[in-house]
Image (cartoon, rainbow, N blue to C red; front, side, top):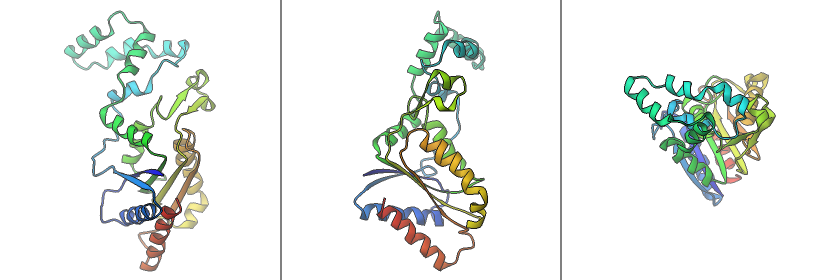
Length: 246
């Protein structure tokens, strides 16, 4: 199986990195291939900018919603200097709102996003290795999902979805599995008391299962800051096992 592992920790000497190494060893010993994307190492930009906009519009938008967008006015308002306004006005030309949406979507994603989408598309399964920050992913990884799992790549939209119905989102990802491995500050009791349930909704379900991943599994390595050597060895053995049995 071709696995894409997205890793997000700033310190290459962290325990989180040790989890990544052991998980990778397990995958290798099981005969899987694994490409690791180290988001800090590649300096991935998690911030959504204007250039990401074309990745979030397409011709599926119904007319009533399109009217609300006021595409021409929005494009002109986004031109932040006189020269830019002249260029945008020329680009708009005589196009109507529908044609502008088609032309915007045809611009495609930014290069860094396109590169990541190609890696995702080439994988049979996904893995994520990161610490828990504020009951979720680190900003660099959350931004990776926000920019890479875009409209037309990770999901599509029905007319009802454009009008606000979550059930109208069309899954487009076809991966067999996603495995999330995260180190935590808080202990297992804290996660059982509600943190795990919150992350299941926000991360497991919304970010991965709704776009089409068939099975999502989430493994926590609790309270690593205070864990002794014996506990850390158990955690690392578990990371290897998860790779070996992937």
